[in-house]
Length: 185
Image (cartoon, rainbow, N blue to C red; front, side, top):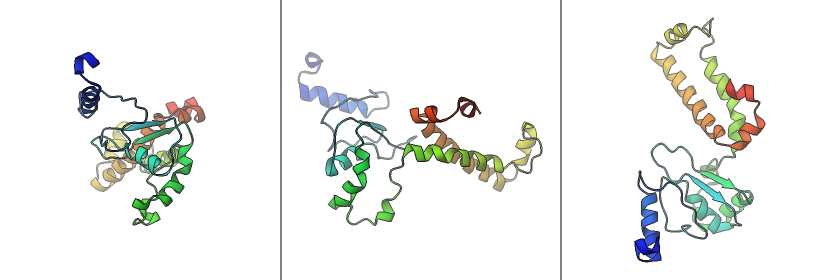
């Protein structure tokens, strides 16, 4: 690759640029690089397998918290338990001093908390159809959703459930803790 690109710097530049393109490379594996000055909104998952503290921890996490089309969340897979120190890092970091802690609450969510929401979100979704006597009658369910306000409530409940289910299905913990029959249901 060095022969192709001419230098290590040119190679790194091209690889990073490719990561930012829709048809470019999809995975970058880096060690002690791209914590500062790297801003690619498509970056969705960060695997942390080294101790990080304070400013460096916040810099690393910020690599996946950019908004992008078709991206609801950034995921931090923490192999070292560094996220347990996140509150301390946020309290120490001067750049966050202007923010009220209530304003940044909920910025990070534990996957276990998201998984725990699923049964209630599933119930909320089906509760919309409470008045329909035969829940297996697809035509009756469709007709029930005819009024715009009811259909809008359904879309909102379905979106909440689907978003949380997508997060759960992307974790090993969900499959370890959820009975197989419930996953299929």
